[in-house]
Length: 494
Image (spheres, rainbow, N blue to C red):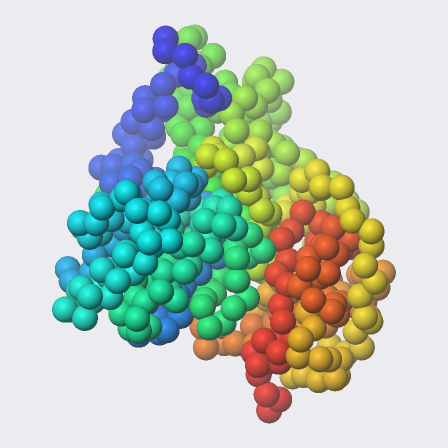
């Protein structure tokens, strides 16, 4: 058997497991495969509105676009849908910052993918100037140019600055190459807070209703027209374990269905012993999900018998589920669950090659109880604590401290929510609630409540204090926001 560097679900080949699942559920294709990715775009969670908004901004706005979401949050899939809605006059370059990380390689990719026909033997400054001039000339002749950068937060600050310079190098804003950057962390993007350069959009995680609609779309594309073959309660549990991230939801639902086919077949007929051993790790997943879906109720006799004979979880997805279940149960014993909260940032990632899915889903834009109890990544050595100016108000329109603050000062934006009451409860649980404030802005035409923390003299001082944030926000990547920018974003009181 060919050696593999990453864990596998079991000794049985994954394609065989998937085929078994397709046959059992009568599916023409894998609901979570690339062919369905290419065939269907689910517009749940306002994804369709976001696609149209991005298309409009990239066509008409003087700003470029920064699309934020955690890993597996659906950024790539949404960007592909944006491309589908542009006409053939657009020339597109798609770069992965994890692999194209050197300036000379980036220039070669831009020239080649956009068909600019330029020599690449100039110095860097001349080369970027030549690229900008060529794009401006051809845009004036009726063409349009778009650059999509995946994993943009993995570029160094120097590389980001050079690529961003293509905006300023254009002879006119309308003659520039448009840019759409996909990133997980706002703090890792140079000038992310510059509203003249960037329009920032954040993808919200899926709610339970979103997950049902998303899976219905995928199963329909796979040939299942009778809905999703999973109970709504189990979809809700699986979506919680995936933290509302579509990429992880695909993984856990696929594992759930594969595990279900193993257990069903074993009950109906004798199953070859080698296959029982091969499927043991997957059965563990079913037991975990089954127990979790019961919400802590007594397990069924069948599950109680099966569990002791099953090997410990050995795949990344299974390990993630097992740990998440343990954390949820521990959390439920200690406190009463609260409403889900939307966090607008995720942990920063390294500048190395794109990682495989990690053992736990990263911190996300909408935190469930499982995510709230997740252990944070080991922090970097913290600088000396910085004492922020105390905040005094959480008024829905314009807190008093914000009205009085100097426009050149900064605050840390921690998260954004639709449900204001949920974040108010979070503030009440803190030891220093006076340091927090809620600003009401607007996202996709609806109120969006932003939680900010502290008042700082500059962005560097604000970022230095991230390591000293309360425990509920450790491991996050807050966004240092300019006070003038925050003031401009606040909705006026009715």
